[in-house]
Length: 169
Image 1 (cartoon, rainbow, N blue to C red):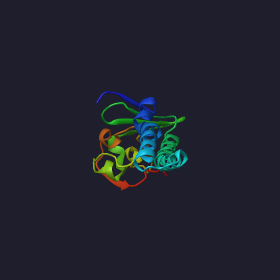
Image 2 (image 1 turned 90 degrees about the horizontal axis):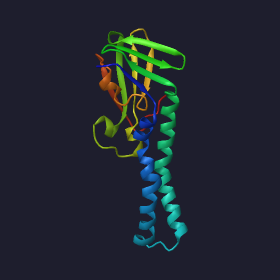
Image 3 (image 1 turned 60 degrees about the vertical axis):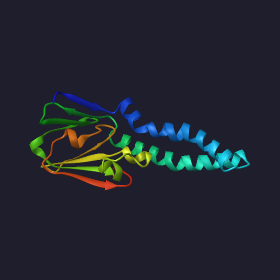
């Protein structure tokens, strides 16, 4: 593998926030039509409340999880220097490690993503990986920084854990 550098850029934001376009623009238009004409709701205000309520159920968790992942890997950089040498930089500190120094890699994913199915909810595409090094150091990499870290980082022991929300602690 050639030298690769991963940072949080506009492409990673767009990859994760596509659902806000749907639930913020397209869904309300479809919802108004459905509420007004199919359910025969007489009041425009009733239709608006229904659509805003349903949209908020999907938009708010996406924003919260996105901010959690962004906050965790803000000003971080992940560099693959060679096939077996990695550098993780967060702020002013850096961790340089080799493949032999990786004790385990745990990928925390939503149920559909772990089973390689299409996402059910808009927050299903968020995931993160925990790299535990032999010396006890732990590195957490969100999908905003490196989207498929378990495929890019070879590890002797790779585990996939499933969860509903991928909240980084």
